[in-house]
Length: 147
Image 1 (tube, rainbow, N blue to C red):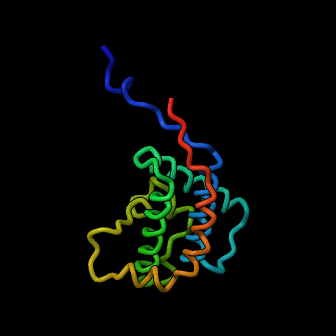
Image 2 (cartoon, rainbow, N blue to C red):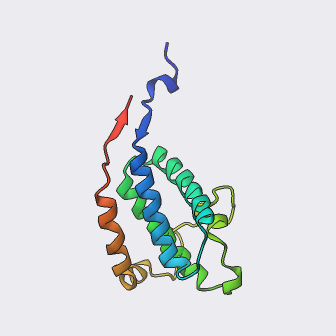
């Protein structure tokens, strides 16, 4: 008799897919939230590790990278609204924000259930940035390997 875990198929994603998603999420987040703030290569490396962890966790729940990127951009846009309401000195560093162990970080931002914030207006305002990012994602090989 097989247990539940043996019946489930494992999902495998090309590293190239995760790398492209990571770069696209970081580029979008940087432009939206920390534009013009310089970060060292080491800081960016650490930030991207944290983003990869979030992406890997999300891909296990939702195996559609385009939907995942859409969800991430919605959270980033919501973060932009939330960041606009606090002093600049209180805006978290990207590595802190994307660390999944941070209870107040990226993973805690919810786009549903928040009232009085017009995400469509934000998306419209920043449409040029979104349009820059989406072609990069559409080039990703979305093939999922199941074993």
